[in-house]
Amino acid sequence: MTDEHGGFEGVRENVDGHPMVNLVSYATPYWVRLLVGILAAFLTRFARLVPPIVVAAAIDRVVLNSGEPGLLSAAGLLPTTAIAGEAAKLAFLRRLVVIAALAYLLRSVTRFVSRYLLQSSAQKIQRDLRNDTYDHLQHLSMDFFTNHQTGGMMSILNSDINRLESFLNTEFRQLIRVVATVGGIAAVLYWHSPTLALIALAPVPIIGIASGYFLSWIEPRYRSIRRTVSRLNTRLENNLSGAPVIKAFDRYEFENERVTAQSQTYHDEKVAALRIRRAFFAGLRLLTGVVFVAILYVAGRDFVTSPDGAAALQTGTFALFFLYLRRLYSPMRRVGKSANKYQLAKSSAERVFGLLGREPTITDSADPYAPDDVDGSVSFEDVTFGYEADRPVLRDVSLDVPAGATVGLAGPTGAGKSTLLKLVPRFHDVDSGAVRVDGVDVREYGLQALREEVAVVEQQPYLFSGTVAENVAYGDRDVLDGEREGSEAARERVLEAARAAQADEFIAALPEGYDTQIGERGVKLSGGQRQRVAIARALLNDPEVIIFDEATSDVDTETEERIQASIERLVEDRTAFVIAHRLSTIQDADRIVVMDDGEVVERGSHDDLLASEGDYADLWRAQADEGPLEADD
Image (cartoon, rainbow, N blue to C red; front, side, top):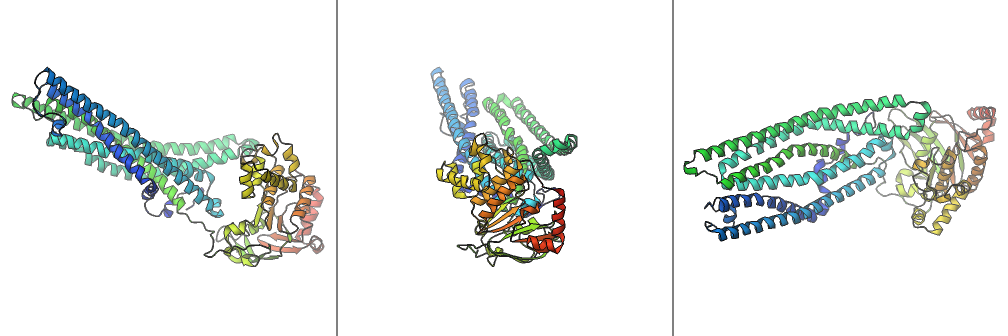
């Protein structure tokens, strides 16, 4: 399903059934309002056919005093006898006015009903589809997010789902328009003149066949356009998020060239598709023009050559034909545009339902284990794992950590430290071996039960746009709900967690304290402040296992010491894993594990490892020579 760009090119492999049929399934909960809306839409179109018939009757029966009764008379709405005298003509004309007024009233009412019901239903379908897609996306495993870029996901959640709503909102009504208008006009024209009706309707099957060919021509082009849009969105999202780096390295021109190149590709593909579309629609207009001229000639010739003017059509009916022709071919030409919109919607539906068809790789077992209490012992048994099958990151790692122990992990960048600990909350599953918590394979746990007991604080923690208090409260669902409701008890728990993480002092100094808006990704806070907020968030979760992935890397030495003092107290009865670049952070750990190239190369206490004169001792001496590592806070 992935490609080198982190896109969704193979998404169709995951679609179960036809994507547009799947879209229709989202409409079934609203079938009553849709049915009423469809009936109202048909009545609207039929009501639109009445005024030209009234005009034809006025011309033939009132102006020309023809004895031909006409369609309204055949329907019992007008008298069939000849209209003689001024009073009779005025009465006849008043009845025509009433019929026309009722038709316009019916049209106005049914138009409101149909548009409201159909458009509101399209909005409801859009809401349900976006909610389901987002919920499904959130439950996909971490490997999905590793292999797909944010721009492509946003394109599906916004552009693609919005396009499906637009298709349901607009093109569905156009389909009703075509069926009702063409069917109604065909019936009226055939009633008056089968020959001219056949001429008028001759383009209908041609347009249908041409639309089918048009779909086959345009489909691969729109598929390519959707891929290009996804890549362009990803490039723009990356550049906007990476604005500080672009500015720092003055890479405006480089990034502008990349965006320009992808924009040009998008332009070229759109222009190529536009060329085909315009040629198709021009052909449809030419076809309808030929039919208009043919009817003008055939009907006009009948008027000229018929003896004593006894033409097959009355004058009013002749006018009716040309009034209807204009209405007949407008929706027929719209068929081509609808075919174009259908192909766009189908491409979007493939991506949306392809995403919905993607199954998470990390799932609960058939009978998930959900213990009442977790002690927190963790063991790794001959663990081998790689993000790609032929490139293992971890090789035969074995490690036993008793409940309540603090384990420090050291080693060079890329040694596999972070990857090893991601296996504990099952962000990924081992390729071989096992990870156990309290002696139970983590694959047997319910995901929610397991992750409620494991908290992770990363080197670059993600904070949500919102207040400081909301970000801390995120660690506990009940506290988060209470914080949003203004609960004093919830706020007190937030304060306790912040104090424990040594974050209370700097938070209190912010312009609005705990209610300060911190911006997207916490951009208004320094790196050290973000880490302390993330530590408070993790502590609020009250887990039995805590993972600190270089969680104090962006704080100065004084702040690190304060955080370490709090952490030592808070993890006293919990199992803690601490990955540290600064070895002083983990020198007091119960055990230190040194990793290199995906393997454990040393383990023991700080003093033992120094005495062994191995890799850890070399790292320690190297950092001692460098002096204290401090970061701006």
